[in-house]
Length: 105
Image 1: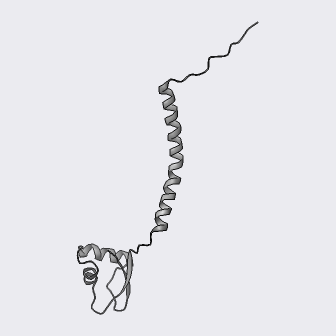
Image 2: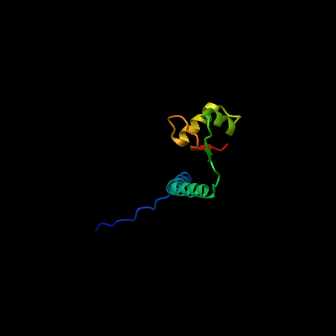
Image 3: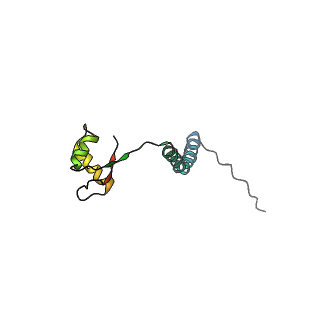
């Protein structure tokens, strides 16, 4: 008659236990991190009421360069003109009475 003995239970060394704990924690972080960043981003967006642009009515003789100098005299006007063009999708000149968005600095 053949007798089978139960194998000895698996015993982990201290290094093995640390490795297992690290793997489990890493897995938990990998699963939870995207959810946490989504929550953090939603909180930041919900609390943000800061305006990034305002509306300006173009007067006769106004140029993008002049408007850029008025709204931000300390910045390089080329950058401000570029931002105004991007905000308004401008490819041609301005028309008196036209309303355009300008960045707030």
